Image (cartoon, rainbow, N blue to C red):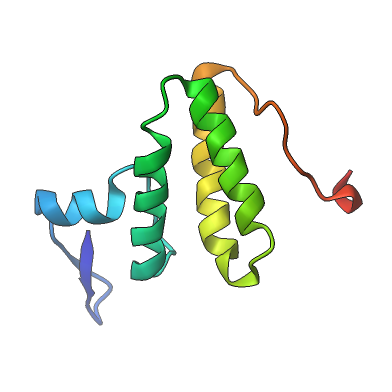
Length: 105
């Protein structure tokens, strides 16, 4: 975890397991605020309790549908969509039902 960026372009990295677990437990959450990283991890902790990847994908889709209406949650939603894409590639399952912006079809 990068904890300091120096003027010469180098960085100080903290490899403490607790820090890494807090911010990168499920995925790379670079670009999210600390608050959004905590929300991301809480959501994914809950999602990963599902019995199968299909359940996890569908539960994640329901959460994404909830976040869709909150303009402040767009970065968090994008990180969750990325995680969902990883689950889809891993399991070769698709969400049973999902919403999509008709303007993008």
